[in-house]
Length: 113
Length: 109
Image (tube, rainbow over all chains, first blue to last red; front, side):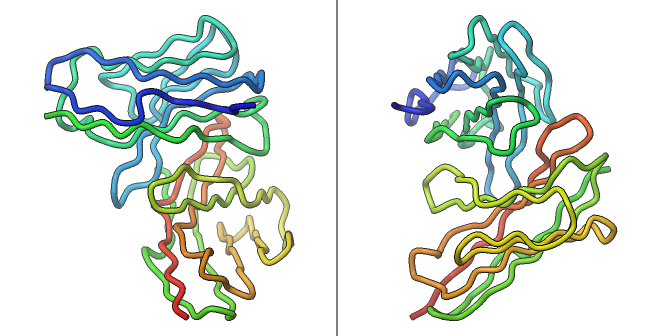
């Protein structure tokens, strides 16, 4: 059982390029989340999905989009990357929005130049 | 607005006890979480409190006072492997987690 996986592990991207970060979980969790983590700041929620077919905006959604076509996958797309999007991105899931625990993927380290 | 506050860094000695505090002001309250994050790794779940009082789990305990907007994580019998960042988070009225910036705990032999 893999749990929750993310790809790529790291990426260097030129500003203006489009990029999709992948996230897959095999725990049949209903809720999934995308966070970014920057030094000195807490994890900040970008987008979330409480169940397949639905998505919602978090604290910092601008410049990012998500889709949730099925239970397992929750890709995050940067339409036109900017240097301020340099960060570590974590995908997480929980059995439901009211669940007691979020399980985190290993993260993607993204650098936008 | 929403605000989470925890110390940036703490240092403790192997075998000792350390208490990491977290204060919060959020839109609604549906539970408080503590996570551990080793450098370069993902956060992992430690504890969940929704009612006032102390929850004990092995060497780790977590306390909550909702009226004071306050929680602490107590780590006993510190081991070198406990060197990590400790993140507190509150689930707000929208069932989203609001995270503190984390407390980096340094354990010295």
